[in-house]
Structure formats: structure tokens, C-alpha cells
Image (tube, rainbow, N blue to C red; front, side):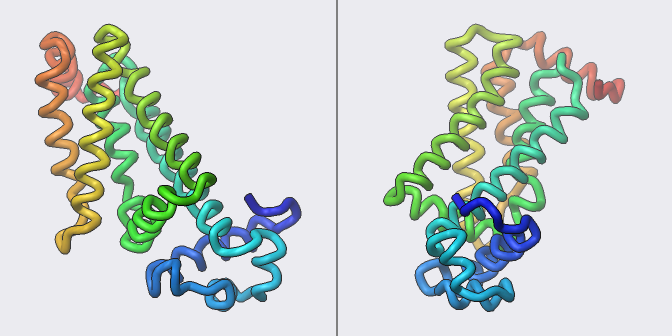
Length: 210
């Protein structure tokens, strides 16, 4: 975490510079001096507020995760609370939001995951992100299935999100948001009560959102 006192605009510049540097050369080759040049600040400022590029990566991921949470919240607000499949897809759409699919952000995610295995602060951040996704999913699923089943389905949806995202990130074709939605909707059709999907189709037919 950065020290208190850094202006938000300067912090935003450093976050964007970190993303740019990771995109261009990777975190290992991205020196503090390089990130400072990208942001238009001196390396001493970075070291003073962040203590190095590892903390910069942590702060960058906090910003990306904040965007992710906002994307999910925005989509959920547009969907009926009674349409569980639509709400699950809204969560999926948030995870595949255009900001998250930006090629530079994708590289930052991959860098974060690789470093989270060895850096406790990043590992904790990853665990928070993982539990937050499962919490979103379980909350919606518990409206229509028992707690144990909701947890099982949530794990399946989360695995599909992560798997499709990672495969796409490493593929020349990129991440396929539509495929993710189709596969997850198909999975839900096999796991949720038929009445849930009858209600979902009725909502889609009438164009009911809230």
C-alpha cells in the first residue's frame, strides 16, 4: 500500500505507467526509473510512496479489481432480482468487461497471478478477489437452490470464468466473452431447476429488466 499523502491524480498516473511498462517489457524488466519516466515522476517519489515496483503492482491490481467490482455492480443493477440466470450472466459480463479485456490489463492480470504465488500481499489480494466472486455467485444462487448446491454451482461458474479467461489470454484469438456466456448459461441450465429457466425465458421475452 502507498503511503498517505500521494495525490490521487499522481497515483493514477503511476498505475497507468505500471500497466504500460508491464505491457512493453514485463515487470521483471520494468525498472522503477522506467515506470517513473512513463508517469513523468522521479524514481525517488515512487520509492518514497511505494517502496518499489512490487508495491506498485499491488496498488495497480487494487485499481483493476475496483474497476471489476464496479462493472459487476453496474450490470447487476440493470437486471431483475428475480431472474437468477440473468444475474449470474451479469456477473460473468462484469468479469469480461471491456476494461478487463484490454490487452494491457490482461498482461497485468497474468503478471499478478504469477507473482501472487510468491508474494504474500498479492496472494491475499488474489484470495480476496476469489472469495468476492464466489460470494456474488452464492448470493444469487441461494435464491433458487440449497446452500450446498449453491456453493457447488458457484465453484463451477467461477472455474469456467477463470478457465475461459486464461485460455483466451494465452490465445492469439484473445478472450471470447460470448463463448463464456454461452458455456456458463448451458452449465446453469443443467444445474438449476427448470422453473428457474422458464422464468428467465419469460423475462427475456417480455424484455423485463427490473
